[in-house]
Length: 245
Image (tube, rainbow, N blue to C red):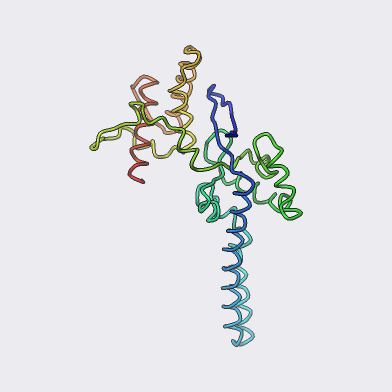
């Protein structure tokens, strides 16, 4: 199974299974269908209201222009609101993520959107060519934004549920509520680091650096040692994820 291997600054290799060209094109077709249905509904509304007076028509066209904005900004809007997914991507279980596993910011989604017309020319040929032949299966928008499109099924399957810090009793009381602020990719990075048996001295040093970074990011003042702190963060995150908080 082909994968994208990314070596992070914490000496952790994150593995992704990239979304195929067929999946990505399928998501585009589904999203195009949703946009088309929305546009048809607006056109029906426009024709139904065309019998108003001229002054009312001016206001109508102004309102319709605003209502058409979701079509123009469809991808950047939904990816920003749905954590890297559009309705089409959600149906096909793929999503946009940063290459280091973290959640992209608005600028990344904007760069993907603004370069979409180039990737889609002609008939998606440039984007498909880049996805097939680039190292990390990225279209031009992904390269500019530092993102990849991956299968959802593989991002969650990287957790090793046999480890103690993934198991908690039914009445488990989390220690750090702030853990739910982290992304799935960030938790995966922490998890892989905690399970990394290679080169113990480098691993422990990376744990120290990562624990410090997580404390600072979440504004947590913890007296736990670094490994225990990260294990608790992962356990708390999984607790909240299981509750769908």
